[in-house]
Image (tube, rainbow, N blue to C red):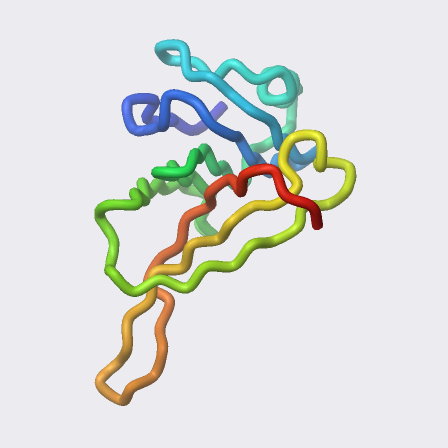
Length: 135
């Protein structure tokens, strides 16, 4: 596998959005100890040569982000609703139709600050599910 996910840091349940060399997994999940219970997730993990590039495990309060850097090493972030700046910019994005049975929209919560010159800077972001809504 070549990487270690810190299961203590991920939300107990929510949605998994994972980009593998051989496909994308986007579905609900439940955390059970040191495992993520999601059908497509297990299929990709068991497939030889199917590298994980980027992983988002999120609910409406927090996101665990795990990704491969350019040097091949992995890094992780936890972004919580409560530990970021007060200034936010929210975007609701429609998901591709083939994933609409999972969620129709994903909310991107951008955490922003202003530089000394008054320029807007996005300092972090997190994904969040949007309650049932049409696109």
